View 1 (cartoon, rainbow, N blue to C red):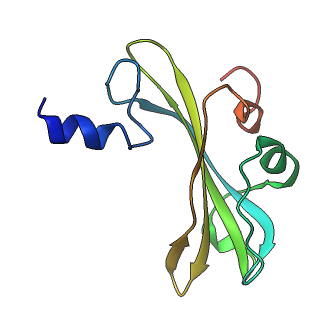
View 2 (view 1 turned 120 degrees about the vertical axis):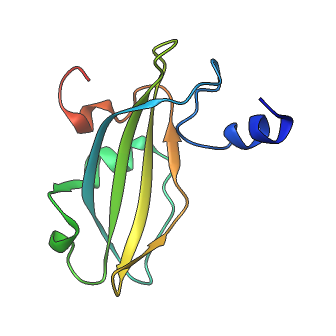
Length: 117
């Protein structure tokens, strides 16, 4: 593995920092957020997501002018390490205006995917 490749993988959500291996997507869910255009606030606390995210089936269910959040859980095939990434976005004319993703490494958002993921 080249030096440049090793450096860039450190900043990708789906690469295990321990094993340096690509993690598998274990679960993925789309959520609606009760936050409207012009009122976005970055949240780093898992409690906000647990309290406010509402699961939806597809982007067509996002009310106009509201944010949504793609939440993905990744699992390392080597060491079993899991992380969950919350990626908020605003749907604008069939394009996603992304905000800063939040990564949770201690199982804080596991309950969003139901029991025992």
